[in-house]
Image (tube, rainbow, N blue to C red):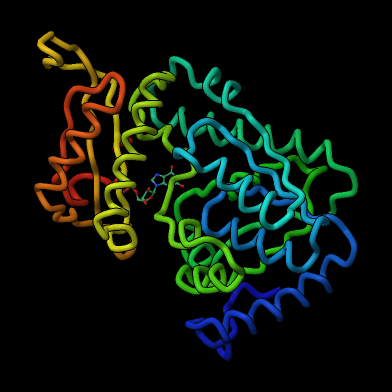
Amino acid sequence: MSNKRPESMERITNEALANAFIAEQVAAVKAQVGDKKVLLALSGGVDSSVVAALLIKAIGKNLVCVHVNHGLLRKGEPEQVVEVFRNQMNANLVYVDAVDRFLDKLAGIVEPERKRKIIGAEFIRVFEEEARKQQGIEFLAQGTIYPDILESGPVKAHHNVGGLPDDLKFELVEPLKFLFKDEVRVVGKALGLPDGMVYRQPFPGPGLGVRCLGAITRDRLEAVRESDAILREEFAKNGLEGKVWQYFTIVPDFKSVGVKEGKRSFEWPVIIRAVNTRDAMTATVEDVPFALLEHITERITHEVKGVNRVLYDLTPKPTGTIEWE
Ligand code: XMP
């Protein structure tokens, strides 16, 4: 099948067009897979979530979703995947708690590219093990979207499954492959996915692993997760969710002196990053109101264990990148 978006294909900009697309794809998926089983790595990101919702509509329990919790997801994400897909959509969802496995493999690893490779390789291994446990899988669904085909851009979590061994090379089901991101969101909305999932900001495949700088430790990883949750909560409360392209926190692997409750403290800083961009090749820094930054600082330094300072990264890309490693 061609990898070029048909010229006649109308841009999906509203619910009616989304419903027409959904009906068409449901029929196409049914025709492609019949009564066979389809496997999907469901990260909870926009693309894999929309594929899951679409395939549940088409083939119900013959879609086997595998959600791998590698311990590097944001606060509340694994729970949301279980709630939305298993509890609300009645999906056939395999939840794999692989937290210890990933963190043990990553212990002591400082170099960012090695961390990325370990996370990617371990993900394939876990997914492969789950695939082998399933009987009668013949297809692999992927949340490939049109920019992935056009640019073959940054490595995404669901692309890691491209590394499955030859005896697990299933036929691909890629219902979103001609859609742009904004269209995927319109389709996700029409499929009834929650806004928090549909309008989610980009999140790297290696997750919080690239924001817990240097060798990942469980306590510092918790500081990243908790500070990120506070930042997201405050951005949502103050109308910045959906307005700022990407925002998150970073915790470096050094400490500085501070004072807490009248005593000297020796703890980590949290760095806040909030950027806007069109294509992630260049980025500008969001002009977050100073009072809001002060409030977030107050919350993070009081609520997150092991943190005594908060910094705001004022660096555009270039010269900085969006992530810190
Ligand atoms: P940088 O840091 O290169 O980030 O300016 C540009 C965009 O890419 C995302 N990013 C990644 N995404 N795996 C991913 O799936 C990665 O290893 C990775 N590194 C960066 C980053 O979040 C930003 O949106």
